[in-house]
Structure formats: structure tokens, C-alpha cells
Image 1 (cartoon, helix red, strand yellow):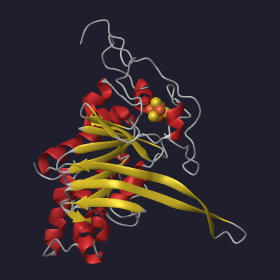
Image 2: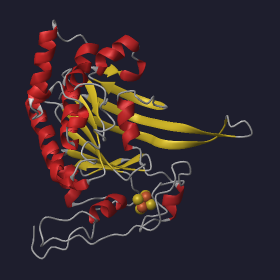
Image 3: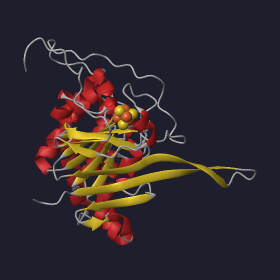
Length: 335
Ligand code: SF4
């Protein structure tokens, strides 16, 4: 069996909270990411889902060391990323790219499309002549469904969906093995989200790119992901194959999240679950299971002991009392 492209082990990111008379004393910590482990295979899409503030984007940024982890290990193509020196990390970064949520903010308004897309080509010197650079940019624009004749235009001359295609072309330019796609369609009109998701899938089939697809939109995730990792307050609570997760979520938080997603088959309806209260602040995480103040089946053990991520029938679940969702479906006919 080949080793995964990416191996993440017990990754944490704690941001200090400062205070005191001079405002420089550390008086607490925001536990944005709190011991996250997962693998990503070549050509695979792993979706990282959860509510806003659960640590998804911080996790994605740490993979590229755009945010430095507090502790943990990240191995990419066999290299320990956190111990690489500047030049070795720079070489590895060529294979790891990111697409951000907001195509309005992520593209410089003063640069022409040609220069935006060519940026990684310039950084890694991936052309021998100016003509080759331009040909490569034109090819990348065609790959993402844009007119190669528009390479002298500026970002403001494009729609939101087209701008995100430009950002994807830039990410593709250095030939990455993995792209962290951080809410790549959330800022787009609903009508064009599926086009961009389909584009990402086409590019994956063509080039074998692996995606860490960060999203809070479970309908989109259901379309694109091979596996899904659910985060709550900085921790992974469930990780499973897509169909297994949607068919029978085991963790009470996953069950609540999925209960809000429409089921395509009208014969099979999910019972809605309303969670009590709000997500606690990551600066004041509850002891034991982070989810216990909102969990409908919490017991004393949950308040005292952190549930480890354990294997249950081929999936990973962090719950002392995990079981297939008893009210996931109300089917009138056998499956
Ligand atoms: Fe709920 Fe307890 Fe499981 Fe946490 S460990 S999800 S509180 S049952």
C-alpha cells in the first residue's frame, strides 16, 4: 500500500490572549485547533466541515505553514514539513497550493490576469522565455474555462465565478499535488457554485490533484468529497467515507449537522435536530467532550473525560457513546 500524500498528526494551534496592565501578559489561550489527525491520499478529496470558527481554515493554513502550528506533525510526500528549512520548504510549496474563499480579495486589482496567473511560474522560474510564459498562462486559462485572449485584462473586468477560475488557474500553474480549497465557492452565486465544483472535479480527474476541501456547505461537500472529516471546536469528531457518513452519522454533532441537509429521496426523511445553545468560545472550551453542553445524550462521563477518536466499523468517531443515528431516516421501504 502506498503511503498517503499527506499525514497530519495531533496538530494544534493555540493563539495567546494577552492582557494585564501593559496588555502584553498572556492571560489565556484560544485553542483554535486542538489535536487534529488525518491523512490525504493522492487524487483524493477530503472535506473538512463544521461551523464557522471550528478551526477548519486554521488547519488548512497550517498545512502550507501560512500559520505556524503550536505542536504536531505534518508529513507531505514523506517530508516532515515542520522541520524543513526555508529553501526546502519553498521547493515543497510548489506542490501545495491554496485557493481562498473570496476571489475579490485574493486577486490583486492592479495586476493583469497574465501576471496573476504567472506568479508561481515567476517564483519557481518555470519558463525559458517570455513567449513560453504567456503560452503557459493562456493554456491555464483555457484549462479553467476562460478565454485565453483575456490575459491582458484586470480582475474587475470579470465576474465572481470567473475570478475564482483565475485563482484556480494560478493554483494550478506550478503543477501541485495538493490544493487546499478554503470555502472556494461560498462567496459565489448559488447558480455558479456547481460549475466551479465541477471544474475542480475535472481538474482532479485530469491531473490527479488531491484536495483538502474546506466548507460549511454540506450539499457541496456531498457532491465533491470522497471522505468527510467533521470538526467541532478545534477537534475532529467524526471522519468517514462520504456515503457512510451521510447514510448513518455516528457522532451526535454530525447527526445534528446532517439533519439540516435536505435528503434527495422523499421517501427518506431526516428528523431535524435543534442543538441547544451556541458554540462555546474557543477561548473557554468546556472540559471533557467539547460538545457536552449541547449534546442531547451527554452523561457524567462526557463532562470529565475527553473521548478519543476511535475506529468504529471503518470510521473514526470521538464519542463515548457513539452509535449509528437512530433517527437518521424514516424510510417507509427497506433500503
Ligand atoms: Fe455527546 Fe458524550 Fe458523545 Fe460528547 S462524548 S458527543 S457529550 S455522548
